[in-house]
Length: 112
Length: 112
Image 1 (cartoon, rainbow over the protein chains, first blue to last red):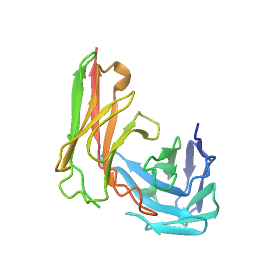
Image 2: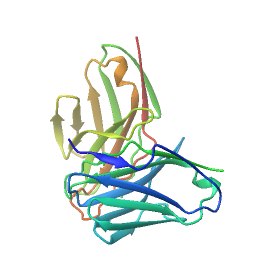
Image 3: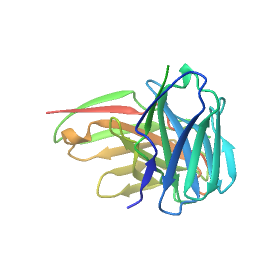
């Protein structure tokens, strides 16, 4: 079975802190994605990557950056956390051309 | 990217067949239609994907008319455990770095 793991299920950070969310997949997938999910807004794509060191902006990249130094790992970085970044963050991966994304369990981030 | 429209919510009873229709008027030639299911506090899970006509797997069926401007997810004989949010997505899965857009989804509530 494909496994996508995220570093934390719950995280509480203070405004202005730098926050790292880590995602690891074990199926050698080319594509990896970061989404955030908020009530009434569904899932919104923040960034995605189709190869090591490659990244593309999604629909809401402002305030976020990403890093993909190894194929299996995709990190989301909040350079200076703000309260409007309180959300559920979901990571996903997929094999190129499959169209089937595998999601991690999510990280619920609260910024106070 | 093609935008999708689906009902915000639906109610059903155990044992009934449930059909959730998704509208995607601007679907492109290379786009596939994919459905995901999401339970509370979990990431979405792939259910089914199709390009045209009908696709069936052990979980659901997907009906796509010839003009491909809509699609219908059919869940046979639902149970309480099918209570979840169902997302319809349209996108070119073969496009490197291709993105899929998750809308708000349809919240299905199955009652005893």
